[in-house]
Length: 325
Image (cartoon, rainbow, N blue to C red; front, side, top):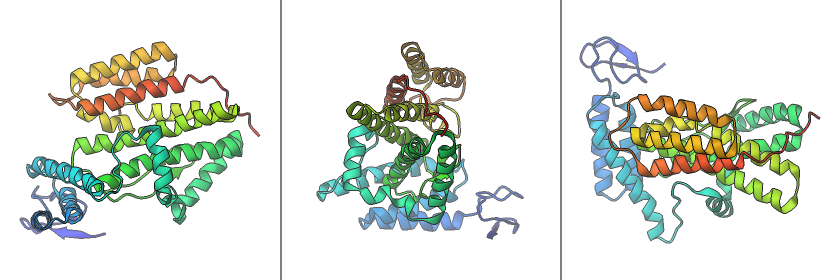
């Protein structure tokens, strides 16, 4: 295990710690200062990628209550906007948040290699095979494979959002019977956390709509079942509590926006009769009483509320799961 020595009291501590457990002093101040200077120099030279990498590494080493974090978050968000705009100026394609079904289609056509990223590494591939075995035993290989693809696309939504920010991330890893996850470097702000969290359900919504379109075109009940269960999986992820995606998004919503989100959940429940919405509704109502920013993020609210409404509608497709093979 890598250790560092505290400059104040000379105690040793694991390198992953931000502060000395003996005296409370920051452990990485010298390295943070170097990274901040390197980030400023890279930004001044027009190297946006280098500046982003240096500043993110600095943020990962700062204690949670370090006063420099607030200003650093704004700089990183500005860099993210400038990095996103740079490919457009060069004639490339920039990918914003909230891709939806059209975004998923366009991305599949233009960035196909990205979709296969998790299939080229042994660990993620083995986790996919193990999960497929579980779903195959329960519902047959066709439904199991379809479910794997839909969950995989959901996770790629998180990876895509992280890549837009320049944050390193692993390929999706599956946990048989429980879903999947990606590992990534720490995020600098709650806004970044919200963007990354909602990226998964947004790509999941796009994949769910595609499954529904295939059902409408083919009449195959398998795709109706996949549409319903993909919607439910993504809806469950919108429960506003950690470690689910909703828990990462609700942190930037004001108390008033949380009240409106609760109302959207109640209306969606009344219109769709999707029982899973009871869980989203109850937890959203509970989060009304927690700490909330005075001024919420309207864009995140609209994305969150829109996902709840759309996914609850799609979950109302009444098709039973395939019988056990």
